[in-house]
Length: 426
Ligand SMILES: Cc1ncc(COP(=O)(O)O)c(C=O)c1O
Image 1 (cartoon, protein in one colour):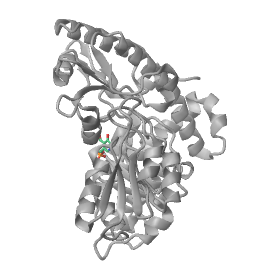
Image 2 (image 1 turned 30 degrees about the vertical axis):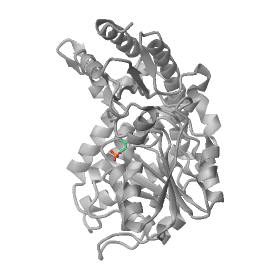
Image 3 (image 1 turned 60 degrees about the vertical axis):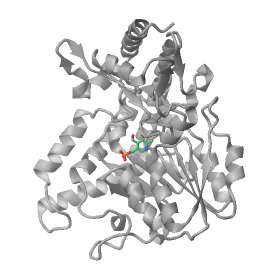
Image 4 (image 1 turned 135 degrees about the vertical axis):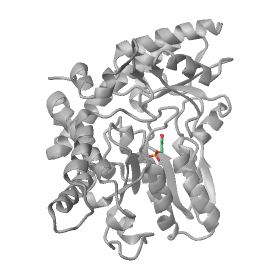
């Protein structure tokens, strides 16, 4: 079987909910995705069958130890980490970043430099600004080209010095949708002796992620953005995780990853995260045969997960092209991101737009009235919105994923057409 939307949609109970006469249309996915029945079942099984604290001698405790180990292995498969103990679980990407930034900061001294990106969500900016303030680090900003919506890597070269310790950058932007060239950025940072900290919250749901191939040092993501529960994960290069001093209580394990996993973990969240990875593996095995060959260097579940990601990327690239093409036909719409048909490989399907003279939140509200869910504003992409000159006015963000259909996109485009005509946009 090839990619089959009907079978996919049948896995997600929330996709068939109808409010009154209106089906729900979920284009708020960059803010959070829906979950499959498999995720719901595994979380509820965890709470019913194995609700205990860890490392006891009794059955429920031993079961939960297995769930924790399984979740680390599942994430290692999704990110192609060398092993599950390079994965640190935590509340969400923001909290993990605030937490580990303290440990990373112990390796820096006043006057050292860090590079932050103007393409990033504040979760990969503010923690480092706080660290810079506390330690007396110098912050250097990597701009992006506001016409191409991409980085010019010569600008990065000009910012790197022998005092640069860290480059923080997103795998993909939650506003423009641009996919950044993490492999090239990491290589350049390493040449200068700096580490890279990658916010992959918006790339992992859409792009096959291979931390070994990317050559980065830390990579963080969130399961609720890739069809799992509210749960954050950090991958760190083993030698760095082992070298960093964890901020932890004394009785907690000295070993990675547990030394960074403070307090009692969200066991049901871990069970749900494993299910989200297994969902990808199911797609890879049952619908992505033509993508298995190009992932034959992976083994077992890893091969299927990465085949699935390649298969879903191809589907999403087509619906993104359809969405962008439709938006471009609408009066006054200005897309804040890559639009060229031959550049769809360089973006995720998250598409933000502005309309001169029409407030972004009025458009989101009018769509919500038709049960079409989208975000408006700057979505915490503060530096991005400032760079584009839309910080105060905001943008409207349409974020389809692989469970959205062309028919849903057409319904959105029709609704937008009427909204903009009513607003007298020429
Ligand atoms: C690019 C990006 N980074 C980080 C975050 C924050 O993630 P979390 O809610 O897991 O802290 C978001 C949330 O929308 C995001 O889009």
